[in-house]
Image (cartoon, rainbow, N blue to C red; front, side):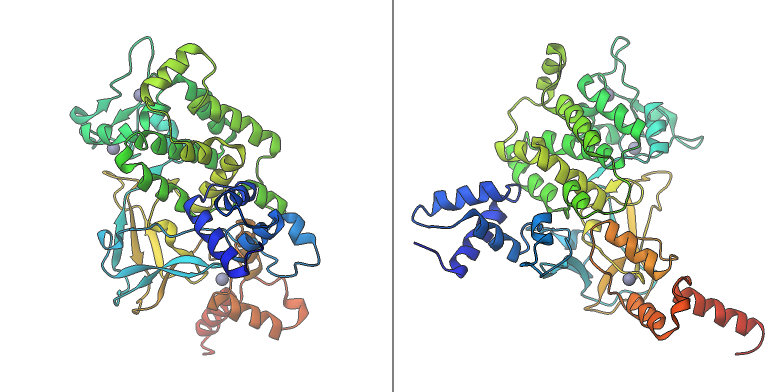
Length: 438
Ligand SMILES: [Zn+2]
Ligand SMILES: [Zn+2]
Ligand SMILES: [Zn+2]
């Protein structure tokens, strides 16, 4: 029989939410497996998934005239079930807006300008290159990224326990606490414990490929924590909840941001597999097996080690990384506005550099959404829009963009290349005020 639209929709929603990592083909076969009497073409399954915003439109669909709807590919994200926001702040909540916009943070109580709204340690931190180089020299903490300085208590500094003269690891930590906490990422990136990861990390550093570097950290966390069946499901839920836009989709859309090409992705993938799944030498395989003792669950293994999943995960890193290289659970829920009301600061420079504090830069009323800016707010409106498109976001329709675009429309055509209207009017005001005109 042919299922109704509603039945099909409900079925694909439940399948895709239970198996977010599966592509159209696999969802389709699962669908037919569960409903053996159904007659549904793969095309119809694809359409149902697209209608629900559960997959991105393929470039073929975009070019076809029969699909005029939705010219933009939007990053997809899902809510983390049971995310306890009150652990961070009692004044905000996570809200799901709609499939296009996804999730965001909304104030539940008044927040005053200047108020720290929450503090957060990273889910994983892939240090900026400058700090990463210090880590490799043993001059910054390999866990919390804090550089060691003259004020560091050197008696507390702790080295990697696996480092020996014959198989050296340069990692050092602020203290035992940082070393203990690094147990969820360090072993797989340690040159002594998992030498197979060295070529990957070296190449990411050489090419300065931030997303690849960050993905290595995310992978190690997922693989290590998922060894514990008690936390595996929750851990994987968090890892898959970050907004996604695969590198393939970005490239199909012709996003202008300079990205490594297909050949580089292939090379990255082979180094990645070598580092975490199939080391090339027997000795390295043995070392990896000493850290990852139990086989990684099939679902997680597919979500990491299939090529399309790998590309999707790289895209995920690109979209969600904080400016200094960390991936943060609550921070990743913040949407963009060119006129933000939240600023992210690294206030604990000497003790916990990677910890972020979200500070209100304006009074925020209950019900108002919290925003950060993903782009340099000093850029003129067209450049901001272009940069956002480059990251896979649709047209920004924040109040500032709308106002500035209206302003441009209202003005002559020869004003097109002028910088941001907001900046200009501010500048004009200042000049006029300085001249005593106002
Ligand atoms: Zn530390
Ligand atoms: Zn080590
Ligand atoms: Zn805007």
